[in-house]
Image (cartoon, rainbow, N blue to C red):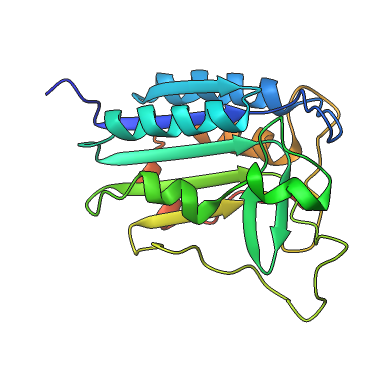
Length: 201
């Protein structure tokens, strides 16, 4: 079997066209890719990708993950929350309300590419979860993604309605803590299901 047992898709978007550029998203993705590779993952690293490139990347990674036991998806970049649904934003995503939905990919859409019922899936989103200014204020929480099963573990860098901090060094506060966790000799992705998640304070 030529397909990897442990597969990671790591995405870092910094060079946005209409959203503000991000200092650390690319370096976060690069360093995490190396850390995961050292832990036995086959890693696909995508940086500064457009919506069309993201579709192609998800399609390719999902074909490679067809027999994987563990699938990890990490995203650093801008996100948007609307009606409790979190979406990641490619670099050609528009900050204008009229064209937003053409470019964004919800966590549910990403999961739909990896519909392998016997694979453990971990999705890590290092992005702000601030509420869209036009959002109805009665929405108080994030919605669980469609196709969210017991084998799926979802981690956010911050809590609903808050910013995720970029950090003063080469990594965001959250990814710095995540890298420390991954650096442990006894690290196994299964531990994420039973131990406290590193969180941005």
